[in-house]
Length: 484
Image (cartoon, rainbow, N blue to C red; front, side):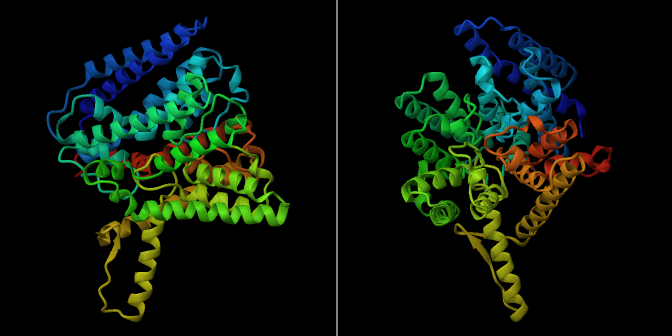
């Protein structure tokens, strides 16, 4: 691994982060907020760090190695997290640790906040919170590739290490063209969501904040009571619609631009996901009506919104679902664990992996009875290789084991058992709200310091799909002469 190449690209990423900080700085100036020093400081530190790293590094002129791609992606996320923390800490709104948790929660699209009263924050900082969602939703590396010059064939390494789920990334001949096409769709959805919310009566900044959070499936809201603040079926419907389309594979939309809407209608994963959401909503509705005597229409409205919010890992809250019956909460917990589609901005295990796990299990059962039978595993018209299926099984094992590990560490630090399980699944699935003392009407502020560090690591590991982070803890990764 060439450390100078890693330093150079990290430096360029820091410069891009500095440029991003100019947007909330401009908002602070336009809103005439007195304290703009926090953003000036953050932008200056990011720029200085970027210049220092690029000056000490070297620009790549060939393809990156696997190790360089993994290191740049993971270290890039960590670096941007520390830089993004500065406005919170420099402005005196949080301590350093809370600022780190808030930033990684934003970048990873988790949406869990450690700030008890977000409505006292200045508009510029609220915009920065939502902007971290938007930058991390599609992926800071993917946006970086789309907007800045390509660095040899190594852009493929960077793109693949940040992609979510087993997807085919060769949508277009050049990886930069793919990144740009995904970015254009991302911007289009964000603009459409902003305009729709603005037309419903939200002021522009509130509409933009919620659009950033919705399309990135993040969940930060400038209001303490999240989507419940509006008490509006229309706004909830708009948010739910955009959460659903953001939970689909964005590559599907790029393909639909070339081959028509039939690509979307025939996408097996997306159809399964939508069916799953509606099925979960109907089950919760029935449970609320039969167990709690709710009105059917109101029950379906709240059940559907929360099913979409949890499955997409957005985490918007329209009702305190912690007071729902145990069966309904169990369904929401499953949706948190599963997440959205591969190649989307949603977190979780991903629907594709669940489908492939079931098909792989069916194949194993068939081969037990018919050992010589050749059974191909197909999904979406694609045949998946043995290596891909083994990769899905390995990922599932690691994902579950990490959920268990985080829960054990939370309990060890004094968090109640069931609350620890909920926070572990929510943080790893980048969902945000959990149950109990960290439920939909609460924050992560009550977590002990060590548990906040664990939660931040869980959010990062969940967003970068585990292996990209875990490999940095393997000693052989840093040794010279390894064939990576």
